[in-house]
Amino acid sequence: MANGSRDVSFEVNGDLVTVPDEGASLLETLRDRLGVRSAKDGCSPQGQCGCCTVLVDGQPRVSCVTATRRVDGRSITTLEGIADASRWAEALCATGGSQCGFCTPGIIIRLAGAAAKHGPLDDAGVRDALKAHLCRCTGWQTIVEAAVAVPVVRSRDFAAAATRAALEGGVPQRVGPEVAAGSGGFSEDTAPADALVAVLDGVGNWVVGESLFEARRLARKVQGRRTTAEARPPVDLPPGDWVATLRTTWVDPGYLETDASWCVPGGVPVSAQGNGGAFGGKAASPVGELARRLADAHGRPVRVLYSREDAVRLGPKRPPVAGGVRADGTGMLAVARTAGIAAAIATVAPALEVLEVDVVGPATSAAIRGAGWVEAVVLLSALDDEPRWVVSPQGASAIAEVTASGIEVTVRCGDRLDDVVLRSYCVGAAHMAYSWVTSESLAVDDDGRVLDLTVRSLGIVGAASTPPIAVHIEPDDGPPVNGSDAVFAAVAAATWRARGHASVWPTG
Image (cartoon, rainbow, N blue to C red; front, side, top):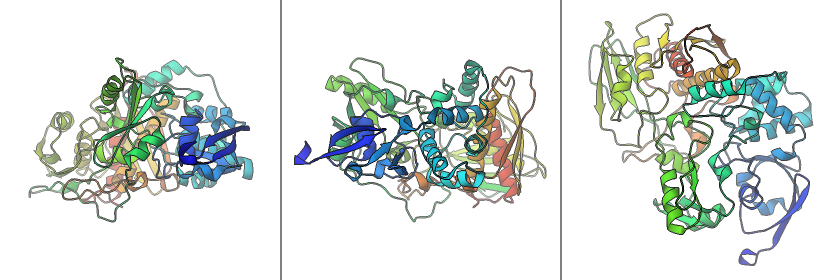
């Protein structure tokens, strides 16, 4: 018993368990001591993403900020203890309400608990419940559809669905009800029970402990906060005869599963992209190589984990830009110096001069979804009074309009393979574009340090504030290609148009 502390006893899905009261959170106890991996850690210990939601005596509670000692003598229900969890998972799969599947176990817990207490849920009730959650993949709408309509589950070719998901997400992915239940194969969930755990301390050193709780205790890192500092566009545009200009601020990819990997001595590290591409944000994550090195050094399996704060501080960002376009379609896009960004812009806008500039700030990456070329498409869209088709570098095309009634988008991207997955990714891309243009930003100080360190400070638009999204998939006889990136670009342009081509993003 740690430090002479007493034991804590409580029920988990009807079974009585007893653990030492060592000061751990309920989430740490569930995952590391009891092996319950359905509750996910997306922001611990911030309590802001909802991925770790469980029921405590029937009431939803975010377990990452609930001390284990606080549940002594109480009843805990995780996804495994929800009587109709499989029905919820099948419904989410049927609508495309789960893509990577990281956030959906917590969402199922909350919605199932609300339905058990209040009866069938309506649209407003679901969106209100989702205020406690974040989902970056789906754009919310497909989750609401699953909760309200409870769709009839039909036979599908999940292999074809997974092929479409891999095209959209950029990495191999699984599709099926088990993914909505959180069993998509995330690296943190597959780590050996006896693995050491490595986390960063407050000055950039890796601290290793026998458990996540012990490693965090040894690291003694003080939790970061959301700043009151204003987010500012970091790139300036040279003067010119511009008819429209655009400046963006720092933004974060905002993926929910933070970087994680594990490795055995002499082995190959598990990919940080367990069941999702993280919108390009993990393409060069260092956690795998660190896991390999630490496992070799300690002679034991080692898990390497980023906290949410680490992911925000250290994860690559979308390169900020400042652009101007002339009436003849020529112009300039000044962009934070980033390997590969000029080539990405040239694929869609060869008439734009690209000026790479040195910017003090976090790392950037051209692997982030549509980095550079989407901003170029959006800037050129200011020359048209009406929406126009956007053609992505992959060859997909999309057109969108944003009105007071919502977002409407049409896409062509070859063989559909699976309509549910394709529509889900397009809805998600539409939400991401709308959120990016209107709401997302990060405050970065003059020394380049990110100041906004909580998941809620990323500015991701929630379920209650997301407009209705209509997706039309047009027949296309070509080979299947990624369609959601074209949707992302088209909706970003349409949202900017609807906001009067405001020169600084986010437009508010």
